[in-house]
Each structure stands twice: as structure tokens, then as C-alpha cells.
Amino acid sequence: MKILFVCLGNICRSPAAEGIFSKKAHEAGLTVTADSAGTSAWHAGEKADRRMRQTAKNRGYELTSISRPVVSSDFDVFDYLIAMDDKNYDDLRQKAETTAQMNKVLRMRDFFSDKRYDHVPDPYYGGTQGFEMVIDLLEDASDNLIKFIQKQ
Ligand code: 4NP
View 1 (tube, protein in one colour):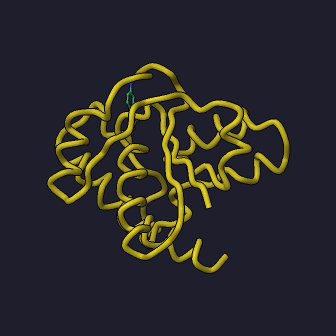
View 2 (tube, protein in one colour; view 1 turned 45 degrees about the horizontal axis):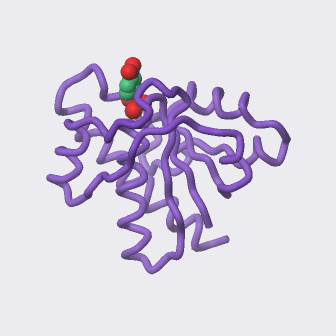
């Protein structure tokens, strides 16, 4: 099973999703490959945002990803491409070339326990609280995503 987490810049939300999901999946004994990418190439080649890395580290996750844009082969290589918000979701579905590829695109909110939230909010222009909130949402969604994969 191969999962690609996708946000806009691939420096905040999707690197955190990759790191959190990977750690939890490993602890659950799942054999999965996780990666992350951006719908933009604005930050290609960069490490995850320092604030995101620090907040994740404080919560027990090392974020090691280097930003890269989504490429068309991702739709073949990965079993699921999971979007952090609705714009990422729409952008991904537009990049898909076949119905089968389009059907691989899911939203992280599909796996939220608390349905009061409907996306992973972009923390880039906000304060520390936004980064903590990203981790809270991703921890919960990762737990449910692992259950989803275990059922397949
Ligand atoms: P991300 O956050 O999509 O969670 O990586 C952002 C990073 C950079 C920008 C926007 C969102 N930006 O406008 O450069």
C-alpha cells in the first residue's frame, strides 16, 4: 500500500501527515509507504517549514521530507492520494487523467472523527496554535486511515 499526502506547498500540512501517519502505521505493524507532495512547486527542494518541524518534534515526530510537486506518475505509483483541503482535492482531480486515477483521490477529512472540521487548515500565515491544530487533526485522521487500510 502506497499513500501520497498532498497540500499546496508541501512544507506544512502534507509533510506532517507523512511523518505522523508513517510513525503510527509502523507502530501498528502496517507495511505501507508514505510520501508527500504539493499541488504547487513554490517550495520545491525545501525542507518542511521550521515551525511545522518544531511543533511536530515536540509531539514526537521527525519530519524529513523535501518539498516536491505532484507529478502525473504519482497517480499510477500510489494507491491513494489524500488531499488536505478541498482546493487540493479539486486540483488533484483535475490532474488525474483517467477515472481510475480520479478515484484514488481522497480527502483527509474523510478520516476525521470530529465532523465539525471539514479540512486541515493551512497554518502558513498564522500562529503557533495553527500548527498544533494541524497535528491534532492529522493524528486523529491517521488513526482512522490505518483502520481503513487494515480493513482492505
Ligand atoms: P502547506 O502550507 O500547503 O500546508 O505546505 C503552505 C505553504 C506555503 C504557502 C501556502 C501554504 N505559500 O503560499 O507559499
